Length: 369
Image 1 (cartoon, rainbow, N blue to C red):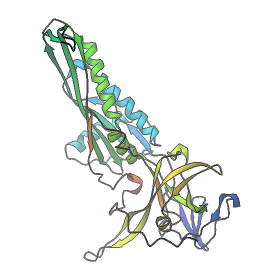
Image 2 (cartoon, rainbow, N blue to C red; image 1 turned 90 degrees about the horizontal axis):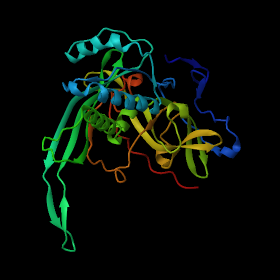
Image 3 (cartoon, rainbow, N blue to C red; image 1 turned 45 degrees about the horizontal axis):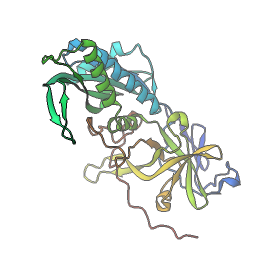
């Protein structure tokens, strides 16, 4: 719950005082020059780890011969993704109570269940498991020196899987984001049997590996982690050797680690000129990178001075997990994610915020001194 009240000259949020026109004085001078900042119009949420209920993964593909191994493999990977995003898995006894409610939502119904102590519910389902074989007869060929090379008969085995990874908001219980994934694992064995027999245990191992590789792909895991990443707020700005740095409420335990990308968002009031309704719009004002070992603090470095000038005390900040596609090219794995129903990557803490994710135009860069 956000706690805020008006005080003389500023706004207190939790233990942080947001003071209009005040110059920060809690850093030592070696940390560079303090820069005066405006205070955001709306108080930020308290920084906290999202509390996630992880449902038991289910195999709904109808391929019962592989048992629940692929589902268990997916669940383990997803559990690790949740914690690496800065969230926490809580209340492992609740999934049994939730299953019927999630089924109600899938049928188009509405759930009235109140979930206390959790911000999100995550569910993994394996929707397809398909195994295939291909027999290749023995053959021969000539090598570069004209010698005959015999190629033995072989069987190729492929296990293909597909599934969904869903995030539900808890107030009310409803689907917030859905991710689809698919992948495969394959191998070959020399054998003369055209029926290509393979033990059930080998098929199971291949299906499990296909699931693990698909769910662990950056094109799936990074958007998933972004949807669960904790949200913090800007506390202070410093200029060190001409570069702007922002101290935030995020810590390494909340995902703010050296080298991770950061996004800074601002909440702005917007009035619909037709309906006359007022809403809060979320606008990304700056991008940067978390840096550590600067006075023992985790700071966000913003290289663009024009963007840095847009940032206000109390603006929202979060980790943005991304992948360098020029260095990473997926091979036999595909995945996609639906558009978020509550805005990109902020989750239920800010579910009431609406609007575009695009950054506004920055003002002209300030002259260099």
